[in-house]
Image (cartoon, rainbow, N blue to C red; front, side, top):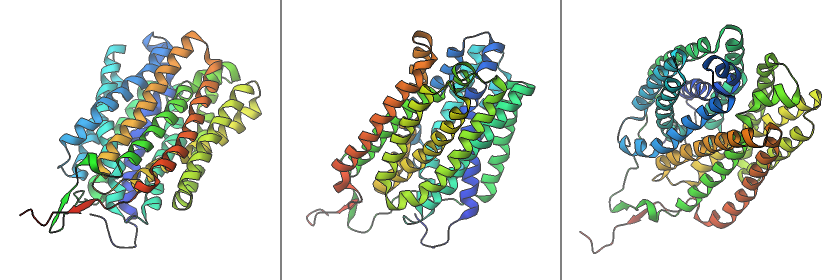
Length: 407
């Protein structure tokens, strides 16, 4: 049940943002420490990159079933449980004695992460009014941006200085701390759709917003595949074609993440006024930046500038997609849409990492930004097509009256 008050629940949204911060940091930390893990484990960079695929594949396969199994459980209680499970899995990553154990730990983390996002993706929509939704998603999205600005770069720097295992151990401890904050500060929500007398819920397949929801999922899959095809291997690209030393990776990720904060802050007003145009600009602009990054990899100054603009645009993509999903999905479909959105993001993340690993070993790292750009450009076109063919289905009635003849 949504709040009717015009006042945003800042404390609760901030607790969600903190939980998102540690979850995303734990998810993407292997990208910054790819070289370190590879050397310590005695495996190739591509094999370490595939940890992202394993993680994402677990999320893809498990999120929808887990969301269905837990649909009647307290949303707040689920957030607490999955954060603790993720903390255990992240600690297991830090202590992994072998590559196989590391894979198992990432699978457990993927199970927790998938259910976490299935719940958190719609939590803001249950906590605030529809008009407040873009602002609420910006607040919770700050957790994701902080992960890229602080979490991943600082974790990378810590891993380079004191070892990648310590870095994962610190994230595990942070997850425990954030779990405590969620317990004390996150308000519980009623996520069930209340039926009025004489009304019954439409079957999911007959919900008119279903095609719009699936269309947004398609955009997310395409855009995230392109993005993560290259981003997963950003560290070896920076060290290789660009020519920076490995110690510079954390600093460049910080530039990327800081620019992403600006993109996130801009996404709120954009999502409120021109959500479709904003998504087109963010995706098409990201594609252009990757082309420039591939063309001018030999120029250190241009590389830093392009990474900053790319980070700004990508910082807006995820919140724009999340806001759009909650805007188009009916209240009846919202929780399922959140689970599917989580699946879509991770299909793109895992698929992109796997495709990047294949290209890395067969064609070389220099081709990655160009192929990634092509994929993201396709996503920009699909945004337009989805809006054109589903605009009439957004925000329809979600319930129908029971026929008078039925008693």
